[in-house]
Length: 499
Ligand SMILES: [Zn+2]
Image (cartoon, rainbow, N blue to C red):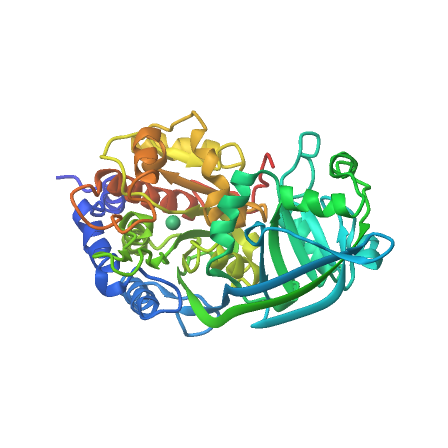
């Protein structure tokens, strides 16, 4: 037998390529544990969090990862605050020229929450800032110390305004004591009210909150304006102008708000496989570990939302992918991040990006993994974020090499803002979420209209792990492709395209 260099190379090559594939059983082992009742639905700040983050760190350690929090710990703290409105008294007054009168507004048409357990604002003027398009310094004189009404939904012709969150942050930065958001339609208000009126968790950033924040229905806001001799229709039109400035309404408010405020620290888990040539950028895989805890009311037999699909499945992929990539010793460093509080608004991802423990501009590619156990094997893969980064061609190359077909319909992009990867995309970091679960819209919709965010998202025979195993092996291939200087030599981070 002739033993050539070529044969040695091909032997090495084939042993790397054919490292044992990730199987459904590999994934199921992790999902069974993470989605067990013992983990309580993995709610941040509970005993279920401790079990979850501990499990991930232990598995990653076994996989050969080392901590990447900037300290010897696997856990990066994320300060959170949970606020629940308990009680409110709202008094709105105006003068008709002769005497002071009260505007009666149905109690359920305005919902307020305090930044602190008790908020008492007395005789505070109410101003309307329209959409809040002016700069902080332009708004400040008219807004500081007042209660500002801000339009939420963009009317036709007002669609190129900055995102609502940006406009609201500007009104708060201008010193508003209260920010009350006007919600366009009654049905939309009712939907917001259900969420706003119950427990809400956010990043604990006191400087980013007004003393009082809340929502008011458009009908109630219109009534208020009419009493103040302001034509709501005219104001609606005027507010479409980018130069619309705050207007005084002549109304003043007495507010007394009681809010349950609970501060706690949750954790992101961060590890890495150090690269052989780390100066050439890095790759990041992430997925959220958290879920909803007990999501059904007292008295129900099964109250725990186990989140088997959302997102124990994604964490299982991250654990198994880490194991396979450890065997490769890649050129680039491969980071792994399990985020907290995705379910409360991508909070763990936001905290990570705000204070990253490694330079974000070194990331040549980021892959978020969320909700993958929905389809059988052999299906197409959807690319959430397709058309928004400069790495689409590379993904196609990997897909071709792996014998996978990409869904080119772009339907999955409807979810781009609803996943942790969006936080990275907003920072212009090439970030995608790639999964067969989002390629089959029928199956996806059946899930979203059924078990999603309910106690039935648990390990049973509806769990489809074929597509999840496909996705896992595809992520191993992605790690190898983007981790290697040979297949992906780019040393500078490609700029994102699109928005
Ligand atoms: Zn979810």
